[in-house]
Image (cartoon, rainbow, N blue to C red; front, side, top):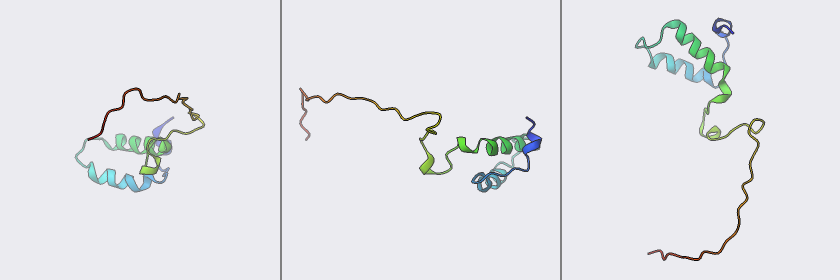
Length: 83
């Protein structure tokens, strides 16, 4: 897929970050076409990024169903004293 086809597509919440990225990275690190490609890629893969702390550390359950880890209750045989 060509990056040119999605140049005009804006996906929130990336819209807020796009302007910040452009103003912070003015040093010529990326060419204009590379910058367009970067913006397109992030907009297309918007759901792969954690945009705030509530999304951090979570996978989509449709791809990674929850796993139940079985544990066995046990009695401590050595107990250290806390000072």
